[in-house]
Image (cartoon, rainbow, N blue to C red; front, side, top):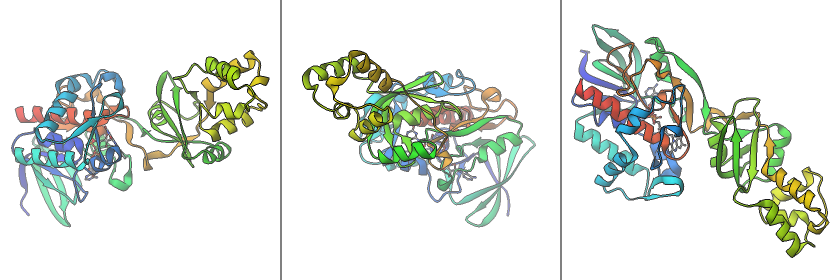
Length: 398
Ligand SMILES: Cc1cc2nc3c(=O)[nH]c(=O)nc-3n(C[C@H](O)[C@H](O)[C@H](O)COP(=O)(O)OP(=O)(O)OC[C@H]3O[C@@H](n4cnc5c(N)ncnc54)[C@H](O)[C@@H]3O)c2cc1C
């Protein structure tokens, strides 16, 4: 079979790959082993896709080089993406903290990206396996198997957009790391992030008893802190605050939970003592945290009696305990449920304005494959859009 000669080959039809294809100019082909493009977009945000965050700043990203993401993010902002969404008449709404979601379905975003690819004249090959890649005479020679048939594509530009390792069931393979490494790039340590945390058997049994309830908390670890909901599950702790802190937590670290950071707990307990001192401590605590959690904490901390029995010092101590509940996760649920992969292709040999390799002319790395990981809340898609556009524009101009 003769070689297919194209200008740009993009590996991965996810968020970053499709966005790049819409900007890379003529002669662009996107290949993916999945049966449909943008599968992670489809399941994201509970099916409604939290497609950006209006508060996006470089500080919302973890990377070996915290400055790396600045250029691309400033050249393609959440407002630019919102403008695109508006041009496609996709209805959306803002949730808390600047998070923008589709009103109808995440499929609107996929359809929009497909339409943008079509407008740009980009081709899409699905059910396509990626084989050997060679770089000769300034071109990339890529062996592909498309729906069972072998072929070879020769391209001037090769874009690695195959994402990270999270959710292997959805087709995540870590392929970009292997290809980038073969071309001499370093890979910073990868680990599951935005992932529920798990605990030893005793703690797990406690949380299983509380499964389904959630509490407002500020969770801290390694200098980071997030104030959102914590959810108790049969496997451990989840909810936005835990997913956020999982990106900072390392094996052996403890996490500190400040329960109900929105309340002045000492003042509240004192007021309740004056109003309802005859009530059991667990009952009063059950007014500020889930009842089952209140019962557990009172028992675990060996407390008993009515509120009226507690001295002011005891109430202060109780408030301090609620504000500094220390827990020791043993692990996380891993790539099986992690929303993203922390780490990836090291940014030191990547041009931050173009996502182009400084080692191999014509090679680009975008999206989650790079060592740039966003917080929960639409930041990861914003990075996928911004890095995809950066590479696409650079390729179009090359
Ligand atoms: C459950 C879940 C919910 C999420 N919700 C949100 C959210 O609401 N907001 C947000 O900002 N982020 C969210 N994320 C994170 C977001 O989905 C990713 O950060 C984003 O999709 C990364 O884009 P990408 O294009 O780099 O990679 P991906 O979107 O993962 O795309 C990679 C593509 O490469 C293909 N591929 C992989 N390996 C190979 C291979 N060997 N051969 C051929 N093709 C291959 C895959 O099939 C895929 O189509 C969520 C993630 C998950 C898992």
